Length: 323
Image 1: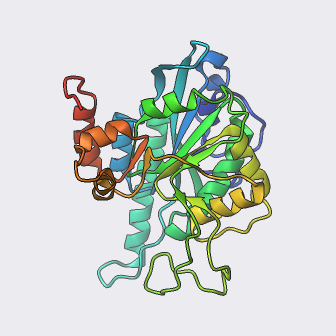
Image 2: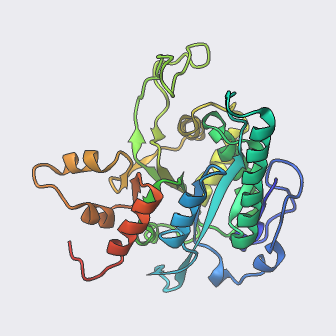
């Protein structure tokens, strides 16, 4: 690994490197692993992000992705601790361009990596592996994170995993999860279900899937893009069965394959709004809700540009604005 912060989970773990080989940069791990149980995260917010998306990660840290103790408490009265992590690969080479030489491209990639290195030292919230960060390699982030999670996070109860253009209403999510087991020991996988989705056979599509790679008429049920939540028990089970499932170019579908093999199902929750504001307003019927009220009633909402998220956050936290 290029960057590894196992102390984020605060629960120790074994000596494995969490996938990717090598010890990586391991700042602050040992001290954090000695955290008392009351300070270990109940919920880990895990965000897939590309190396160059510095503005998106900054917006998340300044809004819903702040680490700390939430105001919500568990049934036993203890506060619920939340930590945030970002999953990165390395910037891939750019397509050939008449205006840029190979040396220019290598220089750009090196500059981005130096900025990522600085970001990791400043915030201690990046996991980075040495593979090209591309759409078709997103499944590698799932595979490596599941390995890392089992190695270093024995005390984390729940994991949210999503994209870096999603808004997460952490308070609503915690209220919901607090109704389940405190330690995440019961299998739970929650999101917006895609059922019996057919593979796209058009070569023009980003999601093109040739019949030679996948012959079935439909994919297994999976949680649609944007984000989902799983308990520790579900994450461990998915990791266990994933060893027998080959990487697949569409990461959401690969998770669905793991769920199918594990005998787990996606629990549908309407609070996972992954299709944008226009689609959500259509679902509300004739009387449309204001965007702010939809955000406040959601668990997650897809999608936001960084400045949109910062602007919305001001109103979201303004208690004088009523729905």
